[in-house]
Length: 117
Image (cartoon, rainbow, N blue to C red; front, top):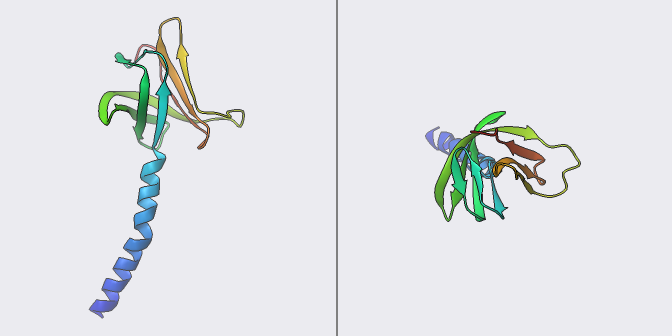
């Protein structure tokens, strides 16, 4: 009886483990920032960043990691992109040098940031 319970438990664990890894991967993307921008009062210098967010949306907490180190955590809004998005894109407001939106083509998602955050 105990052996059957252990086998059942580990079978379920074996099935669920890859699903949790997949879910974890979905809430992160890599982006390239070409020019210095402000987001949430923090300056992001040009370079490669990993963007991770906590929550299912629409309101999420977004963390920008550069070289494995968190450089900014800001509130954002997760939204679904329309079918016209054909490439990943970082949208900025050149007038005040702030990050407005990050579009992710593959998952048809976008992170939107309010000015002045």
